[in-house]
Amino acid sequence: MSEHNTQPNPDDRSDNVHKLKHMIQNTIENLEAAHETMRFASEDEKQKIKYKNARREESIEAMRNEIKDEYRDQQH
Image (cartoon, rainbow, N blue to C red; front, side, top):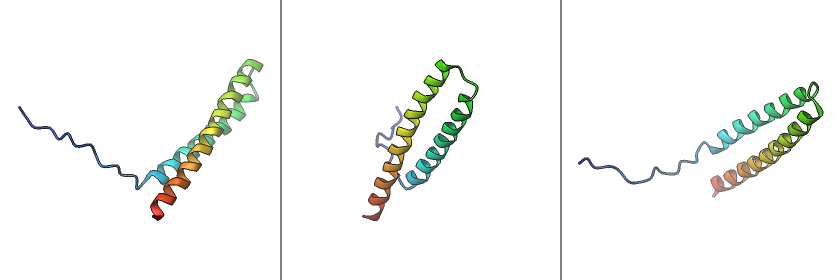
């Protein structure tokens, strides 16, 4: 029987800020695309888009807060 390394991978958070910034940019692009789509959407579709955009805005805020936390952690 072969031996397996059961140690978890180390938590490498060195590029978290970069990844988060990329995720924020993608979310903003999706938000903007959804606003464009609303111009041609039915009322029902507009409501769904508004709901989804509200969740996107919450996600953006949460990711920005996480960037601040990561930055503070890197300073210590």
